[in-house]
Structure formats: structure tokens, C-alpha cells
Length: 221
Image (cartoon, helix red, strand yellow):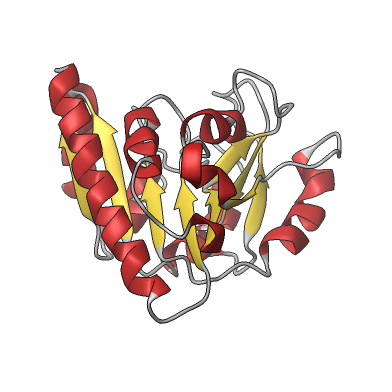
């Protein structure tokens, strides 16, 4: 199983690498939006090993828990430890947290920080939870409707099923990307994706918001 997941990560890294190279041929900087969790670690490592003019690559997150940068729960820490290594350390990484106590207080500052980036993103890598959430678009979040409809870049999110408050790119900002990849592993998530593909209510399974746009699905057991 681990070998299949490693092979999947290599295939995804190659596809993302080719996409970034293609866009770098026609623009000075490119933006890569990645997701956190344990699934992308092998992908991060595979992409970091590929040759790129990394100083021209901007990296940010689809979403983040509002925690300290060194917290085990920080997606930014995951990116720094597994993607921004070797030559890839020269990439311009823009985290989604600030010194503010809450995401509601910090969202304006973080928005100002990310707006100058090379939008639309060249690539967005999405993950998916067992509840059908992607980024921090959770089915039980009171802010789901706002995050799905606003034209703002970022939304502060509170979710009963999650211990920490979060900040997430809006569905609109994620949709604007040139390319979308969904990276998932395990039979349970394949079953959730099958259910999502069979219906259209995004409030029940928010990942459905991205199934109608061109989406490359990368799955391994």
C-alpha cells in the first residue's frame, strides 16, 4: 500500500511540476496552493526534489488551523518541513495566519498579504476528509454558505466538529485556479468520493463544489 501511495505522489508531483514549468514560460512568478494533513507529505517530498526556478514559485495554503506556526497541527509547519527543503527552500511561502488572536481578527491582514500573489493560481491541490470537506469547507460549519458564495479571498471558519478555528480560501478563489487536483488515499475516501459524484448537494458534501470543474483525481489504496 505504501508503495502505491509513493508512486501516486510521484505521479502527482510530475503533473504539478509540468504545470508550473508551463506557466513559468509565460509569466515571471507562479502560485501553487497546497493542502495540509498527512496525505500530501510524500507529494511534497517528491515535488521538492524536482528542478524548478523555485525563487519564482509562490506557495500558499488552501486553508489553515489558527494555531502557532510551530504547532503540530499547523499546515504551514508541514509545508516548511516537507516541501520547502533543498532547492525548494527558496520558494516564497505565504502562510495564512497572523499574530491576531482569532481568524476573524486576522483575516483582513492575511488577505492583504496574499492578494499581491500571482493569481489565478497555476495549481490547487485539494484534499478531502471523511465528511466530504475540502479546504476548510465543512458541512457543519455556519460559515459554509458564506465561503461558498463570497468573492472575498479568505473566510474565517468555526466548525463544531473541529477543535480549532480556521481560515480558508473561498470556493470562488479556489475555483479560479487554472488546474485542480484532488489527492486522496484509502478505500473510505474513495467511497465518500463515489457518494459525492452521485449527488449535487454541496452543503452535505462540500467537495462537490469542485467536481463540476475540470478536476484531476489522484487516488491510491
